Image (tube, rainbow, N blue to C red; front, side, top):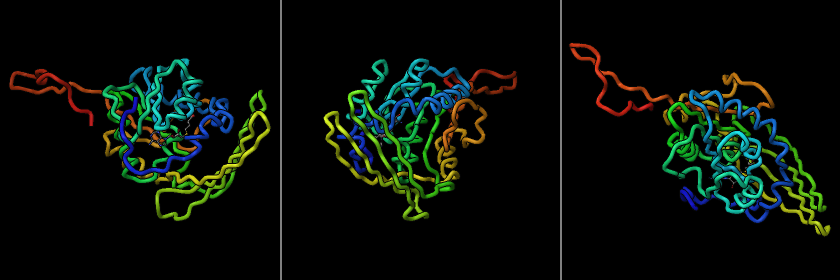
Length: 278
Ligand SMILES: C[S@@+](CC[C@H](N)C(=O)[O-])C[C@H]1O[C@@H](n2cnc3c(N)ncnc32)[C@H](O)[C@@H]1O
C-alpha cells in the first residue's frame, strides 16, 4: 500500500534504499530500548488511554520493536526497503508505505510518534505538513510526540559512530561528522562513512552526506500551536524513567467538548455534533 505522495524532490539516501538490509547492524535495535521506555512514558501522559499509535518514519522499526508488546502500532515509512527490514523484526505490526508530509489514512490513533525520521524534514513548510499529518491522525485527547536529533538552538559540530556484528560474520559500522554550513537556515549536514563487511569477508565503504533538519525551538512550538495542538518542549514533560532523548516536542489534541447554548429558560444541548478542538 502506498499512502501519500512525496511533496517534493527529496534525495533518497542509499542508507534507506540499497543499504537498508544493513540497518540492523549499523544501528542495532537494542540501542533503542531505553529511549523507547522513556517515550512510552511520555505517550501515557495523554488525556486518553493510549493503545493505537501511528509511527511516522518508522524506518527499520528498531524503536517500535520495544513498544510493540504493549501498543498497537501502525508503522509508516516512505522506503519500501526499510519497511521490508522492519517487517522481519515486527511481523505483528501494520506496515504502510507513505510520506509523512502527505499521508492521510482516513482514521485516527490515540497517539502519533515521529522519532528521528523527522530529521529528514529540512524546511519549515514541510515541518508544518508533518505536524498537520500528525494532527489529523490524532484522536481528541491524544498526543503527538516528535523527537528530532537536532535543534538550531543547541546544535554543535562534532563526530561519532557505532555499529555491530552478526553471528554469521557480517559487520556494519559507521562514522559521522556533523557540521552546519549556514547557521541562518533550518538544516545541518552529516557526512557518513559506512563500512560494510559481508559474511565472506568482502568489505566495502560507502560515503554519503545527509541534510538534516535543525529547527528553532520557538519554530517547533509555533507550528504545533498553529496546527491546533497544545504545544510543549521536552523540559516541561514530567515523565522520567529510562533515557531522555536529546530533544522532544509534544502536541496535545484537546478533548472534544459538547457546546452548550443558553436560552432564557436555561441551558440546552448544542445542535448535535461536537465542538471543534482546534
Ligand atoms: C533514521 S531512519 C528511522 C529509524 C527508526 N527510528 C528505527 O527505529 O529504525 C529514518 C527513516 O525516515 C524515513 N523517511 C525520511 N523522510 C520520510 C518521509 N517524508 N516520510 C516517511 N518516511 C521518511 C526514511 O526512509 C528512513 O527509513
